[in-house]
Length: 332
Image (tube, rainbow, N blue to C red; front, top):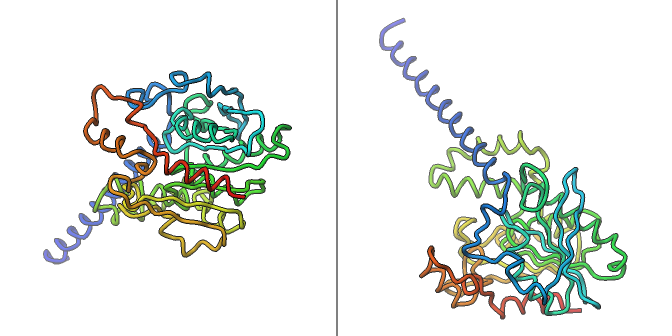
């Protein structure tokens, strides 16, 4: 072999080897990231400096009953906030990394408006058993089993069942409509379409501008690791029914490329005639969660990112937004 051709061959081999090593490193980092993001969550990591635990709130005004619900071999810590004559029961699946406690702010609004509420911890999270959550599709399975439990309770035999979810909770609330439950209304805030889509978005945040190079590897890993479950679709769930679905989104959601959330962006794919949409564009309230908060809370967060936090002000919810959700549930 001539010297020039030999050098060229070595160069090609070196480039191919570098690409393969790069993809191997990327695969390792992606799998490691999955294991962290969908791993075990405990109260040791709960942000007690910024949000209250249930026990620190007005438990006398908002009493609850704790039960366990079986799901796929796991025992889910489940909490029932009950009144004497509820308008309906609202099931609240948490977001990724969230415990049931973080939903107490919305739960109090719903209880004050005359609703029973059921909230729970996913498998591998906080009060529930399991070494990891595993994926957004496992959150969907857990919600499916929670709904089966709620539907079987004698006190809810003739009671309407609604769903309220934010982020991964919004995904689960819409995707579970693919299954046979008697859900009558859904509010989905900052939601996405599939578990695959979420995992692409999370890795895009981590990798930044280099993500288009890594995306094929991530897509393959998602398919290998999660199979068909990765593509269970929230949009297909919405389209499988004609029940009212309210989709909320900030206009600059940091988890979805600083645009609206995928359920809002892909509204042209939604054929449910009773789907409604609200895009929040108010300054300071356009991100993943900020539209639930008051102007004062948003300003306080900006000026107090760390340190001695006023937890009541940090999580102060906006009456107008919560009343919009309650009015949607109240409509006949």
